[in-house]
Image (spheres, rainbow, N blue to C red):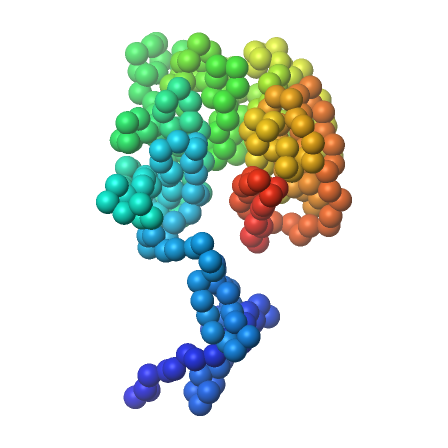
Length: 309
């Protein structure tokens, strides 16, 4: 029968061995960790939470997203949750389940349009309105079979020129115009397939940047049936590193003023900036490892991203 193990002195991170092989000295209580999240390790091996960080909820959260309004959303197990401030605790939050029965662990993409939040994870879709989730689809049943279909369960969502664009595997679908976000034309409601799985889908004022396994191209125009296509980068973006928004939100990344919407992303050669007209410039040249997925956010200090195998 083994007794209690005392963990007294942290010797920092050891990323060279798997967690199962990290040792602990039972006499001194010295140990290593495979990772440390939002904590500092002091010179004497003490572990303390970083200043300004506070645990507000426990759970296996992923795909955290917010449109900057009153709530944030995330995946948690097989559920989609809404995270709002706790009115009884100014420093706390309340986690509410808005949808369940989703594929566990599948990364969720979100898109806020016209006061609603659309979401998809490659397997399931939905729409959140007034804090409650409902189906994204069903409207196609009102038409003749074959005229329209429900939007597919994509892995990337974007809004441009009155339509929602949905990346599903190698194809980018688009909904009908004039706000008919629940309808897709099965005969022509998609962009030409080129370059493999879609890794980046980001709109600027006059078109869409689409990154695939082989390249980044620009689809210029506002009507997808009349888009003009042009390759703008011969390197594929690293998945999850794309970040799109108004120019002022990304000026700290670019190091100067930006007119209109812009997008930044990373590839294995560094960081790129995409602007209206399909203009692309490389902001930073930096060799980066390949990655299966990543996450990015913009702050006043610049653009932060994390890559995972």
